[in-house]
Image (cartoon, rainbow, N blue to C red):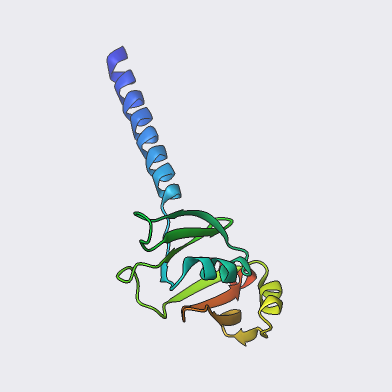
Length: 141
């Protein structure tokens, strides 16, 4: 009888461990937009004004295009000089806690939209960034 009691407990423990592992894996999942840029060095200076810092960069060899990651807290963007990686003129939507500071840095005035306050910026390579106040996020999001 003891074996019958232990089996459900073991199965429950295994099930709990599997659910915990699945939660941990989902916590590591993320979406990272890729933006096409002409020169990563110039793009880095522009994205630094938004609070993004270089995490890493890669190139296959001297003279090859650069692929870089910039980060601002948990937010990540890939910036790529590779022609086939992304179409120029992409659009990324960001929710930032310091919308007013960003608006001031770029000398733009936030607009009131039905979903919250927002600005739109265009980087030197034509990629658009719509930026909303993090406080405007829906309770579900």
